[in-house]
Length: 331
Ligand code: ADP
Ligand code: NA
Image (cartoon, rainbow, N blue to C red):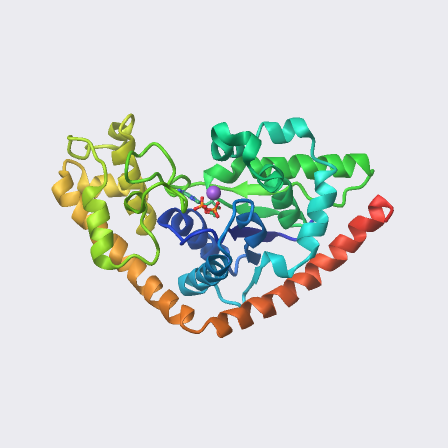
C-alpha cells in the first residue's frame, strides 16, 4: 500500500490560460491539505517544442506565480521546477526502455500535435508521455489531477508501472489514478468551441489568459462564438450546442457550481445577458489572482528562491526512489 500522494504539473510554454486554471490549478488548490501534494513546472516537457530561452525562463516564473497566487502554499505543497531535479530525466530514460513503441504510437495527443509533420517533430515530443510517467512515479504518486486531455497519458503511466513491476518481479510502483471531472475537465476555445483551449492555440482571442485585464476578458467573451438560441431551460438542452455548453461550463467552474445550477439561474436568458454576466464572473474570480501574479513576477528572485527550496524537498523524496529503481534494475 502507498501513502496517498498527489503529483501534477504544467508546462511553461506560453502564458497560463483559463483551462489551466479551471482544469488544473484550481483543483490543485482544492487537494492541498487533503493529501501530500507535489506540483511541478514541467520545463523539460516545454522544450519538446523549441522555446525561446528568455521566454522559457519568464514562463517558468509565470506558472510558479500562478500556483502561488491561486493559493498553493509552499509550506503545504512542494512547488518546484522539473529540470532542477535530475532524477526526472534519469527515471524517464529507464521508462523509455519499458514503454513499447506500439503504446506510444497510440497516443492521440502526439498525433494531434505532430499532425502531418510527424517526420519533423522532436524525439522528445514522442517520448514525452514516458517522461510524464517518470514525473509521477518518481514520487510514488497515487493521484494525478489533470484535464481530460491528459487521461490517456495517466493510463500509459499505469501501463508502464505494471510492466516494470511485472518485468522485474516487484510491486515497487503504484498504479496511479487520474483525477478528472466536473465542468472544467475540458474547457474549449472561444473561437469555435470544438478544440480545447490551449496556451498554443492559433489566436489570442480564442483563449482567456490568466494575465488578461478586465476589458480584454469582457471583449473576448463578447466575441466568443455562440449560437442564435437563448440558453435552454434545462441542461439536456445543451446537448449538441458545444459553444453554449462550454460557456455554461466555464461559468459553473469559475463559481463552484454545477451546470444545472447555472441553468437554473440563466435558463431562457439570451447571450446579451449571459455573456456580460460570465465576463463579470471571470473578472471577479481572476482579477485578484492576476494582480497577485503580477506582484510576484516583479520579484523573480523570490520566485526562484521558493522553487529552489521546493526542489530540495522534491529531491528528498525522488532520490531514494530512483536509487531503489536502479537497484531493482541491477545498476
Ligand atoms: P496547455 O494545453 O495549455 O499547453 P499543459 O499541457 O501544460 O497546458 O496542461 C497543464 C494542465 O492543464 C493539464 O492538467 C491539462 O490537462 C490542463 N488543461 C490544459 N488545457 C485545458 C483545458 N482546455 N481544459 C481543462 N484542462 C486543461
Ligand atoms: Na495540454
